[in-house]
Length: 236
Length: 236
DNA sequence: GTATCACTCGATACACTGTATCGCAGATAG
DNA sequence: CTATCTGCGATACAGTGTATCGAGTGATAC
Image 1 (cartoon, rainbow over the protein chains, first blue to last red):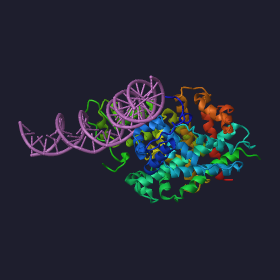
Image 2: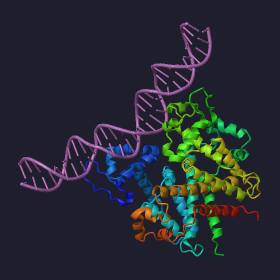
Image 3: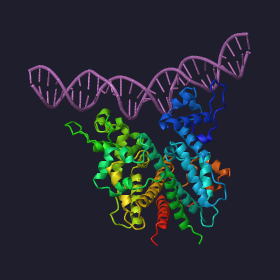
Image 4: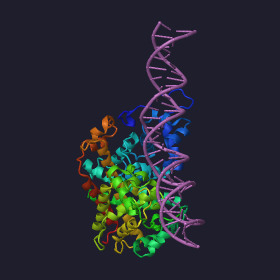
C-alpha cells in the first residue's frame, strides 16, 4: 500500500488484453453509471462489469474506491470552462459559478462528492487557480488574503446553493411530482404542520411565493455575494 | 410499508422490556456513535448493540436507516439557539449562522447529512421559520420572495463555508498534522505541482497567506454576504 | 527445445452493510 | 384451560469494499 496520492502514481502500462483498461476508461465508465443511476450505481463490481472485467482488475489502476471518486470529481472539474485571463472580475467569477452549476446539473452526483474530500487533482487545482486569478493583481484586492477570502466566499455560496438546488430537484423527481406545488407532494404532514399556524412565514413561502426558476434565483444570490465583495473592495 | 414520513408516525408504545427503547434513545445512541467515530460508525447493528438490542428491533421505531439519519439531523437542528424575535436582522442572521457553524463543529457529520435530503422535521422547520422571521415584516423586504432570496443566500453561504471548513479540519486531522503548514502534510505531490509554476496564485496562498483562524474567516465571508443583501435592500 | 522461474492477475473469501422473511413465544379472548 | 392472534427478532439474503494467494503465463537459462 503506497502512501502516494493517485495523482502521484503512474497507471500501469497497458497490457495486451481482450478488454484493455486504463484509468480513463474506468473513470468514464464510472461517470456514465453515476449519470444514469446515481452514485449508488457506482460499485467496483458494476464498473468492472461495464468494462467486461472482474472487480479486482480495477485495483491495478486505483488503490481504493475513494480514489476512483476523486478521479471522477477531477474529470468533471475538467469539463468546466474557465474565463479567459483579464476579464472583468465580476463577469469572470459569474462565469465560473455558472460553469459549476451547469456541471452539477449534468452530473447530479458531483456536488455530493465535492465537499466530502479535498480536491487536489490537476483540474481541480487549475480551477482554483483560475478563480484566484480573477481577482489577483487588482488594486482593490492588494493582499492574497483578500483574494482568497473573496473567492472562497463566492465558492462557498456556489457550493451551498447548487447543493440545495440539486437536492430539491432530486426530491421533486423522486416524489414523481414535477408540479410546482410540491406542497401536495410532501404529503399531509406538511399541510398539517403549516395548519398549526406555528410557521406563518414558511406557509407564505409555500402558498404565496411566486416560483421563479432556479437559474434566476441562483443569479440573485450570486449578485448579493458579488455586491458585498464589491462594497468592501471599492476603489473609490 | 407505510408511505408516511417519520414525523407522521407515532412511535410504538413502550413495552416492558429488559432494555427499553424509544426513538429518543436510538437517536441519542446514534449521535453518540457518530460524534465519536464518524458516520461510518452508525450502522443499525452498532446502534442496536449500543442499546443491548438486536438490529431488527430498531425497525419498530424507524422504517429505514435514512429515517434515523433524518432524526439525527433534526435533533441537531434542535440544539441550535434561535434569535429572539425583533432583533436587528443582521445580528439575527449572524446568530443563526454562528449557531449552525457551532453545531457542525460539535457534530462533524451534521454538515454531510445536511444537503443530502430535504429536512422536514419539526426542529428544521422551526429553524427555517426563525430564519425567515429575521427579515419578514421589514420595509426593506416587502415581498416574501425578497425574504426567501436573502435568507436562502445566507444559508447557501453558511452551508458551503461550514462544509468546507469541516472537510479541511477532517483532512488535517487525518493527515496527523495539526501544523499550519499543511503543505508538508499533503506530500511531495503538492510541492511538485506548485513547483511547475502553473499555479502561481495557489502557491502564494500556500506560502504567503497568513493563516487567520477559521472563525474570523467565516465572519468575513458572512459580512460580504450580508453587505450584499443590505446594499440591494437599502431603505435609503 | 526444454525446464525453471518470477510475477501478475483475478477468482475466491471475508467481514460488513441494510433489510425481508417468518417461526415462535407471549399476550389476549372465549 | 385452550385457541387464536400478534409482534418480535434470529436467521437469511443480496450487496458492498477489499485481502489473499493459487493458478497460469510469459520470460529466462541452459
